[in-house]
Image (cartoon, rainbow, N blue to C red):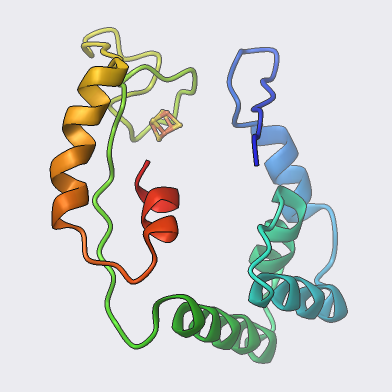
Length: 144
Ligand code: SF4
Protein backbone atom coordinates (compact mmCIF):
# COMPACT_ATOMS: atom_id res chain seq x y z
CA UNK A 1 0.00 0.00 0.00
CA UNK A 2 1.49 3.32 -1.03
CA UNK A 3 1.10 6.11 1.47
CA UNK A 4 1.81 9.75 1.08
CA UNK A 5 2.72 12.17 3.80
CA UNK A 6 0.87 15.43 4.01
CA UNK A 7 2.81 18.40 5.31
CA UNK A 8 1.73 21.42 7.27
CA UNK A 9 2.58 25.07 6.57
CA UNK A 10 6.09 24.58 8.01
CA UNK A 11 6.73 21.71 5.61
CA UNK A 12 6.74 19.18 8.48
CA UNK A 13 4.68 16.02 8.28
CA UNK A 14 4.13 15.86 12.03
CA UNK A 15 1.17 18.12 12.71
CA UNK A 16 1.33 18.99 16.42
CA UNK A 17 -2.02 20.80 16.36
CA UNK A 18 -3.79 17.84 14.79
CA UNK A 19 -2.21 15.37 17.21
CA UNK A 20 -3.10 17.51 20.23
CA UNK A 21 -6.62 17.95 18.93
CA UNK A 22 -7.06 14.20 18.51
CA UNK A 23 -5.58 13.48 21.93
CA UNK A 24 -7.37 16.06 24.01
CA UNK A 25 -10.57 17.15 22.29
CA UNK A 26 -12.68 14.06 22.89
CA UNK A 27 -13.55 12.04 25.97
CA UNK A 28 -12.55 8.43 26.47
CA UNK A 29 -14.93 6.08 24.63
CA UNK A 30 -14.76 2.42 25.76
CA UNK A 31 -16.81 1.14 22.82
CA UNK A 32 -14.54 2.93 20.37
CA UNK A 33 -11.44 1.63 22.18
CA UNK A 34 -12.70 -1.94 21.84
CA UNK A 35 -13.47 -1.42 18.15
CA UNK A 36 -9.91 -0.19 17.58
CA UNK A 37 -8.48 -3.15 19.51
CA UNK A 38 -10.54 -5.49 17.32
CA UNK A 39 -9.29 -3.79 14.17
CA UNK A 40 -5.73 -4.13 15.36
CA UNK A 41 -6.22 -7.82 16.18
CA UNK A 42 -7.43 -8.20 12.60
CA UNK A 43 -3.92 -7.00 11.61
CA UNK A 44 -5.25 -3.84 9.99
CA UNK A 45 -3.18 -0.67 10.26
CA UNK A 46 -4.53 1.96 12.61
CA UNK A 47 -4.82 5.52 11.41
CA UNK A 48 -3.91 8.56 13.46
CA UNK A 49 -7.39 9.03 14.91
CA UNK A 50 -7.61 5.37 15.94
CA UNK A 51 -4.19 5.51 17.55
CA UNK A 52 -5.33 8.55 19.51
CA UNK A 53 -8.39 6.62 20.71
CA UNK A 54 -6.04 4.13 22.39
CA UNK A 55 -3.74 6.80 23.79
CA UNK A 56 -6.68 8.68 25.34
CA UNK A 57 -7.71 5.68 27.44
CA UNK A 58 -7.11 6.22 31.16
CA UNK A 59 -9.53 3.80 32.80
CA UNK A 60 -7.28 1.05 34.28
CA UNK A 61 -9.58 -1.76 33.10
CA UNK A 62 -9.66 -0.34 29.59
CA UNK A 63 -5.90 0.11 29.57
CA UNK A 64 -5.60 -3.57 30.58
CA UNK A 65 -7.77 -4.50 27.59
CA UNK A 66 -5.42 -2.55 25.32
CA UNK A 67 -2.37 -4.24 26.84
CA UNK A 68 -3.95 -7.69 26.51
CA UNK A 69 -4.84 -6.92 22.90
CA UNK A 70 -1.23 -5.91 22.24
CA UNK A 71 0.04 -9.13 23.85
CA UNK A 72 -2.39 -11.21 21.80
CA UNK A 73 -1.40 -9.49 18.56
CA UNK A 74 2.29 -9.89 19.37
CA UNK A 75 1.83 -13.63 19.95
CA UNK A 76 -0.18 -14.03 16.74
CA UNK A 77 2.47 -12.27 14.67
CA UNK A 78 5.71 -13.37 16.34
CA UNK A 79 4.78 -16.32 18.54
CA UNK A 80 6.55 -16.82 21.85
CA UNK A 81 9.82 -15.21 20.77
CA UNK A 82 11.72 -12.03 21.36
CA UNK A 83 12.15 -10.23 18.06
CA UNK A 84 14.92 -7.70 17.54
CA UNK A 85 14.76 -5.04 14.87
CA UNK A 86 17.78 -3.42 13.29
CA UNK A 87 16.73 -0.07 11.87
CA UNK A 88 18.13 0.82 8.49
CA UNK A 89 18.58 4.51 7.95
CA UNK A 90 18.59 5.46 4.29
CA UNK A 91 19.22 9.12 4.95
CA UNK A 92 19.74 11.79 7.57
CA UNK A 93 17.59 14.46 5.99
CA UNK A 94 14.35 15.27 7.79
CA UNK A 95 11.75 17.98 7.39
CA UNK A 96 10.62 17.75 11.01
CA UNK A 97 12.12 19.37 14.05
CA UNK A 98 11.70 17.00 16.99
CA UNK A 99 13.61 18.57 19.87
CA UNK A 100 15.43 15.41 20.98
CA UNK A 101 16.66 14.27 17.57
CA UNK A 102 20.00 14.92 15.89
CA UNK A 103 18.34 14.66 12.47
CA UNK A 104 16.02 17.61 13.18
CA UNK A 105 16.02 20.21 10.44
CA UNK A 106 17.23 22.99 12.74
CA UNK A 107 20.46 21.09 13.45
CA UNK A 108 22.73 22.94 11.05
CA UNK A 109 25.75 20.91 12.12
CA UNK A 110 24.32 17.56 11.03
CA UNK A 111 25.81 16.04 7.91
CA UNK A 112 22.96 15.28 5.51
CA UNK A 113 23.29 12.10 3.47
CA UNK A 114 20.79 10.13 1.40
CA UNK A 115 21.87 6.67 0.28
CA UNK A 116 21.40 5.74 -3.37
CA UNK A 117 19.97 2.39 -4.44
CA UNK A 118 23.38 0.73 -4.59
CA UNK A 119 24.30 1.89 -1.09
CA UNK A 120 20.94 0.75 0.30
CA UNK A 121 21.42 -2.66 -1.31
CA UNK A 122 24.88 -2.94 0.30
CA UNK A 123 23.35 -2.17 3.69
CA UNK A 124 20.44 -4.58 3.29
CA UNK A 125 22.24 -7.65 1.92
CA UNK A 126 24.28 -8.60 5.03
CA UNK A 127 21.28 -7.98 7.27
CA UNK A 128 19.14 -10.15 5.09
CA UNK A 129 21.64 -13.00 5.18
CA UNK A 130 21.80 -12.81 8.97
CA UNK A 131 18.07 -12.38 9.50
CA UNK A 132 16.14 -15.32 10.85
CA UNK A 133 12.43 -14.83 10.64
CA UNK A 134 9.61 -17.20 9.78
CA UNK A 135 8.04 -14.65 7.48
CA UNK A 136 10.30 -12.74 5.07
CA UNK A 137 7.37 -10.45 4.28
CA UNK A 138 7.31 -9.22 7.86
CA UNK A 139 11.07 -8.75 7.76
CA UNK A 140 10.84 -6.59 4.66
CA UNK A 141 8.02 -4.53 6.08
CA UNK A 142 9.83 -3.76 9.31
CA UNK A 143 13.36 -3.40 7.99
CA UNK A 144 13.15 -1.41 4.80
S1 SF4 B 1 14.16 11.84 12.14
FE1 SF4 B 1 14.20 12.99 14.07
S2 SF4 B 1 13.40 15.03 13.57
FE2 SF4 B 1 12.83 13.64 11.91
S3 SF4 B 1 10.76 12.91 12.46
FE3 SF4 B 1 12.25 11.39 13.22
S4 SF4 B 1 12.62 12.00 15.35
FE4 SF4 B 1 11.70 13.79 14.31
